[in-house]
Image 1 (cartoon, one colour):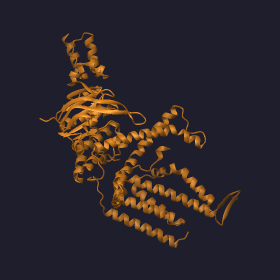
Image 2 (cartoon, rainbow over the protein chains, first blue to last red):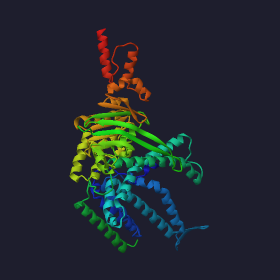
Image 3 (spheres, rainbow over the protein chains, first blue to last red):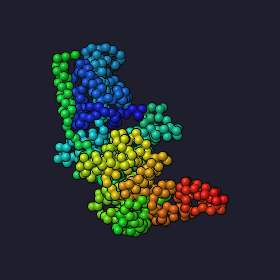
Image 4 (cartoon, rainbow over the protein chains, first blue to last red):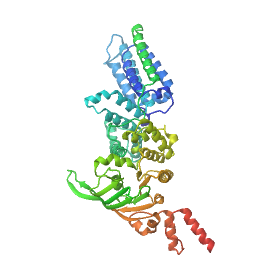
Length: 269
Length: 287
């Protein structure tokens, strides 16, 4: 289960999407996520799905890799879907049983909400799969640079984020190891009610936190030893420079928005 | 000639605290260390767990500062924080756990991390990254994620990350403790090559005896003090003392000593398997 987390993992490949400036990818992902909430008809989802399909094909990341990101949120997905289904009031009642009322508006809302969440997750995991954490940090640092004037420590925040991303696979592996070690000692993570199960997780979390703290302290020493002293006077190995393909990508995003807006106006289905 | 590293009666104390934070006692991790290292040397510091060898290593990188005594690295006083960056640049440090010292998610980006911090111009960073990855034999892995590498490979990437900062000296704090025998061998070989071909001063902190044979000079630490020093042969010939400091001698030396006990006439200071077989074959031929 833990190995399925794809957010924050990088998929190595040679593709146009991989080569794009990370700022383009961050902005495009934001636009894409916002666009998901801007329409309320099926045609919008078809366009969003088709657009996403094209980008994935261009990125050469296998679909299996991207859809794996959905598994960990399946519970949340079902929960939101159920809430939307049960708590949406409407005129067209489909099923009435006791206090449960299911309306066709509810069904529609449920499907759309679930689709939005799925696109949101796979959209953002495509960004992290095609961008190295360092590039991502560079992009965020660059995009939020104006906040420096407001004394927001942009570089430090970006660095923290990139390190967090780097350690996700390591900590996942470690959790796996600790779980197996505790299972070997007779721990039980499967049975009992929800409260019992959460309690049973404590023997996993405590060793995990302890080792994470130790890793953090080791890493801080290693960064010190490599002359890290904040963003001041730091140069870049891979400085961000817009190229022609990046301008083109912005143009493609602009076209995408136009298509979404126009179909929203003319196709009210 | 001014020594590259000069420690004079170096003392470091940790205070032990109880739960309220009151000092309950003082631990002397380092107790009067005197060491001089010439540029270009390959030095090994041997010691069991808790001997103070890692504390000493952290001093060389200005990660810790002396409680008493002085330590000069490349002519700079490490207790002055103004010198921190200069000291760390001229004496780079490689740590024990390969996972906890790799900062970036791509090998080449990690190697570039040090030069980036130092403010090296972009083209120069690329040149250095390429050069140092080639030096440790990891150039073909430059686009890989460190998570896919073996422990020995990760440690060589860490060494490349230090090399890219163009240090005069590399301090390795038990770099092989978490590696398998093959990885251990590749790391020590890399270090030895850097010492010979690039004239980098090496300070290898370890408790593996087999690794020490690569060094020019050995210091043995116990209880925060230097108990023995000399060439690897001189040190290994004093096996009884080494055992007293909870250190074990290489297997070959052990066999040689056992043979001597049985009355076989061979020297006490044998370090390599080939050496012992040669001597034994010669003995046999004479008989």
